[in-house]
Image 1 (cartoon, rainbow, N blue to C red):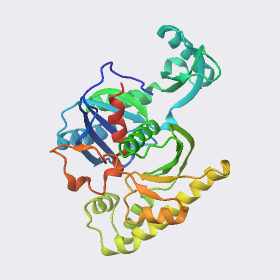
Image 2 (cartoon, rainbow, N blue to C red):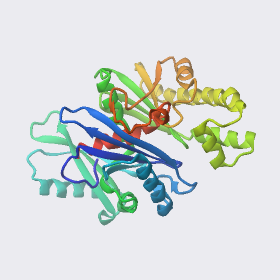
Image 3 (cartoon, helix red, strand yellow):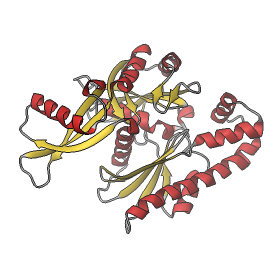
Length: 357
């Protein structure tokens, strides 16, 4: 759902993923024939406490990191899409008459929102999207309403402007990830409408599971398990601070025990956590099975993780490359992208979303 957008779709746009430990940027271009090209990508760490529970607490620090990304990536576009954590957005599906004018629809959405949002309307950013004809009614359509606190949306807009970017859209993280997954499946010929897939995003603080059939999310659950557990163990075992531990991971300069002992232990523990998450889905959907598991996020490329998840769950798991089957621009550094592309799923989805505005 777009809370703020321009009217004209660009031929080149940015997606900016703002996480609790890193910010990631993707620039995509689309040709007249609909081909996608990865123009640039970059990531940078943010200081601890700069982003907490999706809230930007230290705007200057995060803006500095984003400006550095823009400079290093050499991006040409300044039009950017960002996202709010899905838990910060209230979604509600309603029906309304299909022949309403735009003004009538806006009033109707405000009236509906007032009935289920626990905040004054003047404190809300509201948007809605027509999903399609309502089942069993020729005169109604199904509509999805999205509502978020204005201050959360304005934080994103202020960040973009402080970094010298032009904000186009504020989406939900869930929608951005789902869009990137759907486009990846479409490009690779994997998009089968009868398939039920699990998308598992492995973040710094948490692991998020979405079970998706077609374009519908059947189940979603988050678990407090992420790369933080591995970082904490690196700090304890090797006597490093957090900045040193994270930098050592990125450049591959940790002691040999990291790859020989810590990574396999964490991969096994992560596979068990993923299997535990899936059991919640199976318990509520008896008889339904998954056709595959897609792993995304910064920790998805952990050595051996996909095979361990496959073994633990009995379902084939793969690590997503959201840029697979895209063209790649001459300025893209393949070395920095190798093994890290799964971390850019949300940023890629946001860049894709920019073209739908």
